Length: 88
Image 1 (cartoon, rainbow, N blue to C red):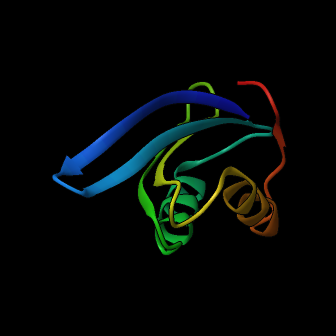
Image 2 (cartoon, one colour):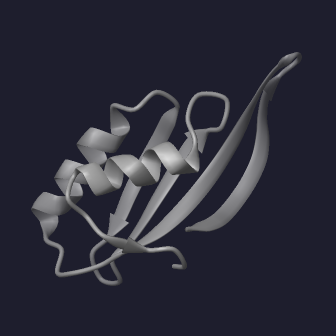
């Protein structure tokens, strides 16, 4: 897993810690995999966006650290049947 970017967003006292993580998925992926990952990860609390690049199998997830974690997202990816390497 790679930490890609960190920011603090919000107004006044309502700050949100927004983080992007990147996973390099293994195997051959198709557009249906993109739909599955985007839909299922998008249901997780705190997940803001999910992008899968089918050319290089890199999954980019933007999320709120106050609501979920890298470990929870990686575990969900595994539950969905995908394998990944820790460095993208």
